[in-house]
Length: 243
Image (cartoon, rainbow, N blue to C red; front, side, top):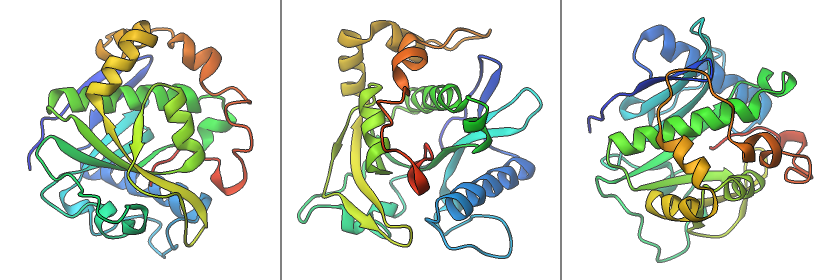
């Protein structure tokens, strides 16, 4: 499937669909750093790149600095190929659940921000802009439903921030790192309805593409990732990442 590309500027960063070979290499290196070296979710290899069978038809959305350094990324899988939920993570799907494979549905995977952002206190800022990019991409491409497989504690953080998703199966500990994970489906119509009532300012920010730096929405700066929200979110499960 062919999707429309996006590009916009937000708070000193660029969000855009990844196109060039150098940008792809940056993405695969960042994925290796996070999913192989930091989290241990993927076995290491000698290339220093994390690439798998899903990448040939995937869309990559990148968060870049003004100097074109990759700060975060999301991989989006189309419904005309197998989802990871149907193969690698099928244990997270309840028996009898029918995975949606319509044109308005995609699977989110390999969502992460650069590990150095945590030391710099920038991880919540980068995550907010990256998720805004995901929402803008979904709007442009008329996507309503998004599957994701995510570490359970990070799933709770996303719920708290207004990205509501419904589990489609049990919480299970997945090898090789043994992280408790859950698969869920996010309905963007539910996202809009919920946030229109509870966080209208946040929804306005998500919906409006900015052309100049802005202050982060209040819930990200004050409530979003404060210590009590991330209580116990440590060790090998401390990255803001989606499988």
